[in-house]
Image 1 (cartoon, rainbow, N blue to C red):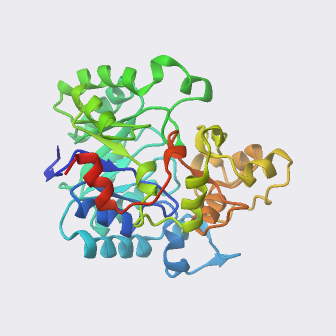
Image 2: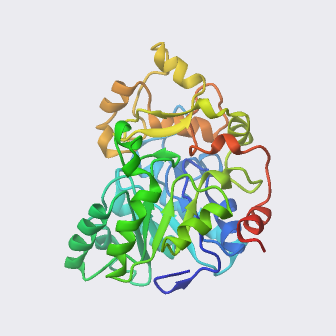
Length: 355
């Protein structure tokens, strides 16, 4: 699979998962094994016990500057490079975050070969990478219409996407559809792919399928539909090298199919995760008080949307990263209940590629 100037041995992109699910150890090992490792830029202030944070309140990074720590992101990339050498590495930067442009530039400076952006329509993404022409840009879309808009808007920068990820509504974390739209047949991944492939062919844009992809049979299915590759997130949580806390992995290993739900989110999109104690606390109006210490996402309006849904997403994702089962928010794709054991990244890549 070729994206921009980069060759990726196997057509598998590891999903960018934050806070701290895909950092140096996971992304570095995926790239080492011939896939594309993706470092999440979300919540880097928590890396190595907030080592790079200058200002904290209640052990949480204060403001978007600290929550999206530039120095921590540089350290994550440096440590990933120790694992994978000069193999391609990507960075996932959500469009909905505060300080999006700054974080994209930070990722380029840290050594990202590619930037992947979803959670919104990144119509001005090329603006922030003008000084890094070799960095490949990969938007995440849910429809051909969204890709058409991006192509049109990017034309003013003289740029087309180096690849596009089409994400269906079975993925973990935030979705590109409303709750009701996630359930409609026309919005399932196999129905979203054909019109995107048709449009992308006109511009020679590789298409990557994402959302609910589990095994080699799924991979082959989407390659046969004209995709250049697939993105997989949840399966990589079930690896020893995944940067997630052991308690996070345990939640997924013990999750039942009926416990994996779509939740309301302060970001404004529904998000999929495991129903744990946090959701019961929200239902009883007993969840932790919302203080908006980190000011993580623009759509939340400094905690206003968080108050409506009953929780702060920065604090709860960070609690999950720290292994707090009582208060953590544990994102997973719809197939998360199928995880039943941990394997190495090498074993997983061998299984997915039949090496």
